[in-house]
Picture 1 (cartoon, rainbow, N blue to C red):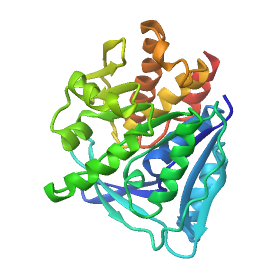
Picture 2 (picture 1 turned 180 degrees about the horizontal axis):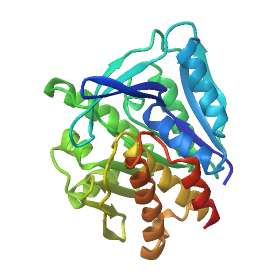
Picture 3 (picture 1 turned 90 degrees about the horizontal axis):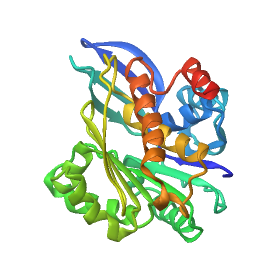
Length: 305
């Protein structure tokens, strides 16, 4: 496998507890995934944009210092995107976002068949730059690149449902693996039943559906498998980044086991168990810290295995 391309937004997260800022970290859903993959020494590139300001400088240096390629990061004159994350008593976050000043078109790489692409969250359904994103995903589709999509849908009003669902389903036509939380699917389709959902998304070309349900269970559906995995209970410090690192665990497992579009439908139950275990462990490790990505120490332990 050649390269892993992660496409998403850069967000600087300021975290509040009890009404006071307690920490600040470089964030963004797909960026969190990229940082963990970089710490695992995988050949990962981040495709994004950020302002030519102090926050942008911090973010760019953070990516480089964690082994993430920045060849496809665009800088623009203006302020970078910010997010305020207000933690509740269960350490779940409610967000307020402050938009970036500009949304210049992204520059996308050329792809080889053995590459991997992960994308998702708000960036994947925004109007700004959507045509270029779809062109890139179509290139991935035409070359049979393994694509992993995490919708990571935020709350939206009833009037937005039709347009949001339309864009998500355009993305599903170009994704091989769909991983989302039960909240994502409830917001989109008013159901989190994995069997019902797989019947809905399989006609788009989705080969694998993974539904996470927080601390409760993980469900996987393919054309030949219907599996449910338990989730180990942990004492959560913050759930920010948990889903993003579940995705990182999937990508790590796919890369380690040389899983590509050509063989993903042939993965047996024992291999899926190992891949899902990486995903669940990465998510749990992040839940136990204030940070949005696995620690360098934990990454070193994984690499020793």
